[in-house]
Image (tube, rainbow, N blue to C red; front, side, top):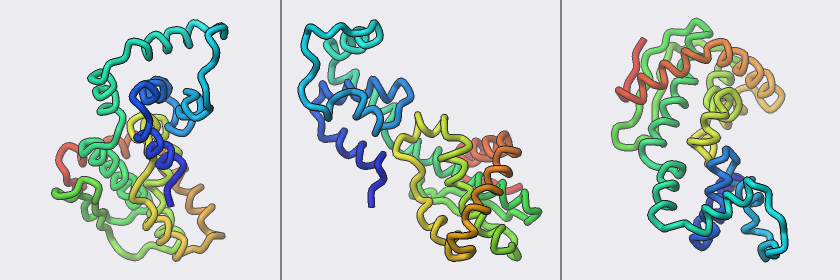
Length: 214
């Protein structure tokens, strides 16, 4: 099932160029794709009549829309839409979040790496022997980091949200059940906030080298 952001992104791809530019202007202000689709008015029928008095910001946005060109739109889309570099960036943060939580529990981190043939795939290996709550907390770490702790960064660079986390969430639920997930999420938020700079440092190293070992 598609998330609302993925659905909004899919709807965006079917818009005519002029409407795409309207949406893009809202995304560049920091809005999610869903909010941008709604705020831009592309899904709400006819445009306002010419008698409508626009605010200065709306007038400037309309001026940009009226003077758009295909090359400009393509360039702006490249900065915001998924590509191999941005997928690698997300994978780096995904695996770094796992790694930092592992070490916070005092377990030995073996290594983390990015698949050289598929930047969307990564691997985190560590010492066995975690409790069910610890295992679940490690599993949900990428979700908490990408969607809650480091959200402002990923809201702009990763508008499609955290991908590849579904299996992590399923594993966490299998280990502690729905009743234990809240505890895992809460504990994970505390750990990641306390180790905010460490996650970023490890993610940057992994993004650069494709492999990290403490």
